[in-house]
Length: 140
Image 1: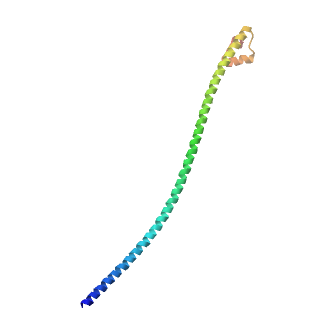
Image 2: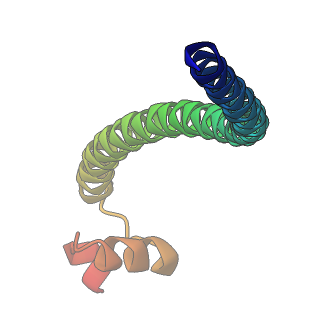
Image 3: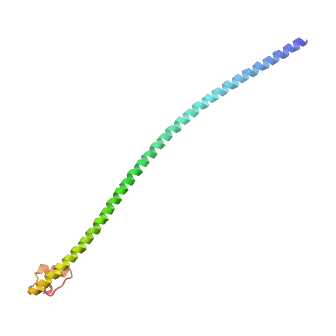
């Protein structure tokens, strides 16, 4: 009976080991299937994120190029404004200088006119009056 009992125990142990091995194989197969499915999902998500990252990178590059162009344009405009301000300043200076020269010529003209005792023609008298350079001859 001992042999038979041991034979049953051996068979029971063998059956248990086979059942455990079968369960282990099923468990490992299920794990491989899950891992494979997870790897496919991970690969798909990675591709999606890489695609989005590439698009974002391209947009960032486009924005950087636009900023660079805008900065260059701003520099050009600043240089233009600086040049225009300089031109305006030079023109104002030349205008003041021309006005001083004109006043000098007008004063000489009036002095010459008085020295020769001649009258100003009406148009010249009007110009002198408009400029505030009233003379005895311009009033007559």
